[in-house]
Image (cartoon, rainbow, N blue to C red):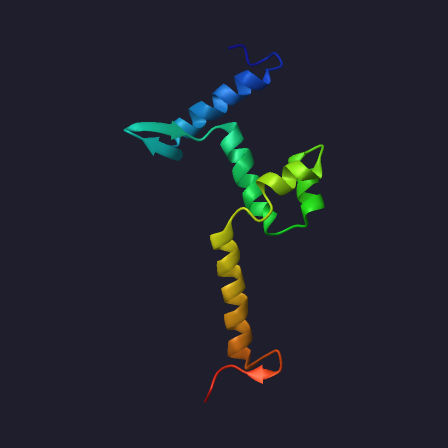
Length: 108
């Protein structure tokens, strides 16, 4: 591959896959077959991480989605376990503070 010329998306994707394999970044294993990280896997990971940190319209811009429905479908509210953990942590923080909704939660 000649690196002095502009590379196509497919060529860049191939390089990223080789990097994922060389770095041993495994996305999945099925029957002994390993799938290493690709550019698309890295893109999805980026979207999932930022979904809990920014508003959906900001994530839409970051992901360069033409339609907000794409962002909502794939990234907003998709990780129920992480959402539950965040809520429980917020609840515990309030409980330790002594008052949630006007009533004491932790008895002395």
